[in-house]
Amino acid sequence: MSITDNLQKLTSDIPAHVSIVAVSKRKSVEEILEAYHAGHRVFGENRVQELTEKQALLPVDIQWHMVGHLQTNKVKYLIGFVNFIQSVDSLKLLQTINREALKVNRIIPCLLQVQIAREDTKFGFSEGEIKVLADSSEFRSLQNVSINGVMGMATYTPDMEQVRSEFRYLSEVFRNLKNKYFDSSPDFREISMGMSGDYTVAIEEGSTMVRLGTVIFGARNY
Image 1 (cartoon, rainbow, N blue to C red):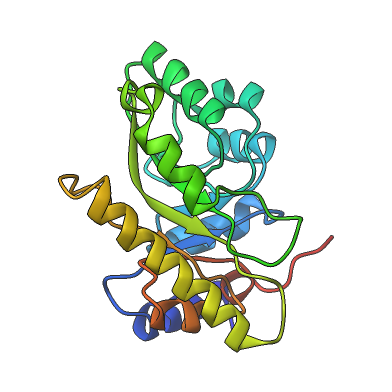
Image 2: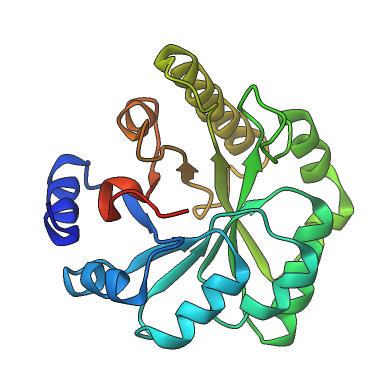
């Protein structure tokens, strides 16, 4: 099946309230354009250099999501155009995004990345760390970021019950944060979880945003 066919099938299968971020890392401009001409507009990249190179070559109405680990010294390169930073995992990173966004008079939507996987390789806050963050004066002083929800990556495992429990936990973290800290914020509504191998389980457990690469573009060449 083609990229267009894959997107059409996913769009018909996935509930309308769940948005699809087409993760285009290591995919060519031509492949992204095929998805674009099929009507898709939201794309995600893991690396700042690849994101900035592609953004310069592709239509300006594409919404770009940064979904990979983001170093503070790279924020300045994407702050002028990025639509969403899904992988915020420290106060220092939030403060850097806020400072750079102020320079270009933008408010950047962000998700707080929560460590839900039973792996040491994943980044993210614990729920307790987010609560400490949300209670801090440093956090409340940030004017140029908008906290729109949470993001998490499940353990890479064939055990879907483990994956389900990790997604269920992320939904619980979202509800706890919404009730205690973001009850008055209509923007705090996103739970970004689910990738090509587990997105159906993620949607069942409350995902509002799935990050899909292989099921759209096919296997990546490494």
